Every structure is written in C-alpha cells, then in structure tokens.
Image (cartoon, rainbow over all chains, first blue to last red; front, side, top):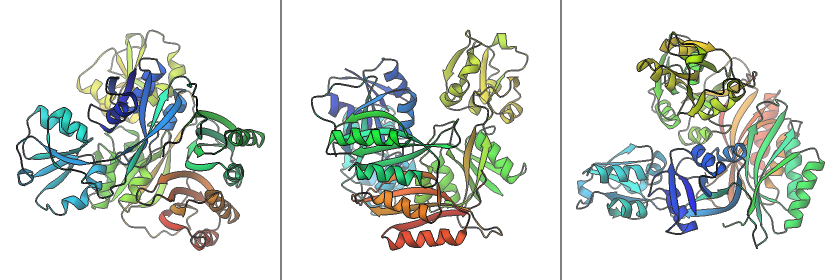
Length: 271
Length: 271
C-alpha cells in the first residue's frame, strides 16, 4: 500500500497514515495538498491522506476543491486527537529553553501552558514536525518544538511536557482518498457531495429544507463560486444519515428540483 | 497609508493594494495570510489586503477564520479581473521557451492556450510572481512565467502573450481589513458575519429561511467546526441587502431564535 501525505515524517498526516494503513505501509511526503491529489490521480500512490477540518492549519481547508478538480473519491474519514508536546534536544531541562517554535495554530492552542513560563518566547514557524527535524539535524539547543510524540521518537528528541494544549478533547478530521470508489461490506452512513443550484432568492434555504425533510444531517457546508457560470452557486456538503435509501431519495429530489449533484464519496461516519 | 499584503511585488495582492490605495502607498509583503492579519492587529500596518475567493490558490480560503481570531474588521471588498500573461527574459521568442512555471491554478487556467505549444512543458511552482522574480534575478532563459503585467514591468520581463487564461471574465475577490470599523458616508449594502447556532435537526435551513424572509441575499457560506463546543455549529456568512434596517432586523431575529452573531464588517458591495 503506497500512501501519499502532505508533510514530513512525524507530522499529523504521517500519524494518520500509520494508524489507518499500518506501520509497514510505504509513505510519500509531499509539500502541498495539490501534489497529494495529483499523485493519487496519476496512480503513483494508492491512497492519499488529507486534513479537511484542521485545528492546525485553520478551521477551513480548500481541499474539497482539489478532490473535485482531480476527480478523486473519498473512501473514508479518520479523526485524530490532537496532542501537542513540548520537545527539545536531549539532555535539556525546561529552564534551558528560551524559545519555542511551531505552527501559529499550535502555539495558540498551547498559549495557556506557556503563561507559566514568561521567559520563553513563542515564534511562528511553517509547521510542527519540521521544527523537530531541524532541532535534531542541527543539534539546536535552547529551542523547543511543539509536535507529536511520533515526531519526538523519529527525531530523537526528549519530551519536556506532554499534552500541553489548552483544549484536551480536540480532534482533526482527515479524509482518505482513492482514484476509484471501493466496494465495501457495510452500508455507508455519510456522504460528501457537491450540489450546483441556480441563484434564486432562498434557493439554498429550500435545498437545505429538502435535505432536512429527508433526515439528512448536515455536518459541513461550503459555498464555492462557480467561475464560468456567474448565476450559479455550488456547495460542498457533508451529511450523515441512518437510512441509505433515504439518502438516495434525497439526491433524486435535489436533481428533480433543478440541482446538479456530484458525489465525492459515500463512507462510514467515524465520529 | 501602510498596507500589508501576502506576496511579493507583482503579485495580485500587490496590484489590489495599488488600485485601492494608490501608487504611493507603503507596502509590506508577508509570507502568509496569518502574518498579514497579525500585522494589522498589532497596528504595524494600517490596512491589510486579503484574497477571500481566489481563482489562484483555490476557490475557498480559510481567511475568515483569521479575521475572527485576530478581531479584524472588513472595511471593503475589491474584485480584481484575473489576467494571466506569459513572460520571459527579454529578447526571447515563443520558440525559445521550453518550460513554463507557475502556480498550479494559473497553469490550469491557461491550459487551452498551451495546447497549441505541445513542446512546452508545464511545471508547478509556489506562486506566479516569484517565478517572474527568479527569471529576472538569475537571468534565466528558456523558461517562461505566467503572471500579471505589473510583474513583467517590475522584473523587466517581456510579455510573449497577453491574457492567455481560458475564461476571460474571471474575477478574484479581495477584502480590505482594518483593526477598527470606519465611519462611512454611504449606507452599507453587504455584511460578513459569523453565526453560531445549536446543532438541531434542520437548524441551518431554518436560519437561512429566516434570512431569506428578511430579503438577505446570501453570497457565501462556510461552516466552521466549533472546537470547544461539540454540539454547536458556526457559519461564516456574506449577505447583500437593499435595506440596511431590514439587515438589522434580520440580525435581531437570528439572536431572538437562539443564534449568536458576530459582525466582521458592513461595507459596500462592489460586484
């Protein structure tokens, strides 16, 4: 199994790949989500892992647009509990640390912890794991990273404090992508779709009422400007349902009411 | 006037800053949108320019989350027509170009043009203007950039083909951000707000019906996971209206029905 992720070993994407596909899966790290989508599209990787609601890079990610553009299929989802840990080059104590570098969201999520250490300055960096790698590669002292325990293990750093994030019960949602849909033994109870409707007064409210009347439980909505059709709107929707037939019926009703539907994936809700 | 943008001179953000605040405004370029938001929040820049619906970096940007987090105010919006131009180090012809490097979205938007040049390979790069800068700095021959006419001017490149994008009538929406709201002489007819509601069956459909009944015309919606309140949902909404009093009434009705409202800005619709 070849898995494409965005990021380096020790990143949250790497952790999700290992949890979903086992320690022996082959992992390719890419710089961008776009490269992950392309690699799955071109068959270089069997599956891609992509954060979709992300407490690290911000709450909203444009990745459904990539799935749409590269014609990929969502085969599943995964919720990773986000655990931030303070780590440093081995042999150092808390009192040796003058600065901590990490992704701005990670620093923000650990702000309360650092209130007790006013002498430590906090500094933005591009991501979490790459700071850990740099400390290891360049044997940097006096600087701490905030990253996963896996990153500490991979880069041989010592953890000075575990689980330093303010909100303890914090999950990031990832989706698993393939080029083609998979046959599954279980009935899906969640779907990600794109609906395009004409922009008329109250048309979105009508669409959502229709879905609600069919017992679809909406968990995500993003409007997308339709570049070449100025009077149309598209929406990326996630919805959960108890009854697969009712979901099929809902899609038919959307089409009957003039909407265009594209299904990105039908899968099992893991929340 | 000090203006913060994401990107380097010659980027689309740079163009918007010049169009909105004049050729003599002082411009600071930052690597990330986060740095732009922070600089406005800390008063280092008077105003920030931020793409919000972007045909370059994908259709959806997480920037409302930054506005929310840094407590900024949207004072206006600006639509820039996207014009892609093929440019190269001076003295070269189309036949000298073997490769064109640009942002993947820019390459995609110009795909049709390059079908007539099968010998030119297309290669992803991080953005549009930085390729133009690199060609100029390193006097690179045989490689073309796709960027704005402003970038060609700044970096002294020659334009080999103008307006090579497939869809000619393509705009990107930018918002203008300040730390504090501005007093304006004209009545706003557009607003960007955040609404938090309890997650009950059909609650979003009800919220949108309420807004539609008050003649609010929705032009953007993004759901946001509320990290520390698992049973709540938040939505970033843009809406246009003809009557400011009706807009105020709509907000009151949302609050009366149990929603929490945060206004990011009230401004003039420029579309």
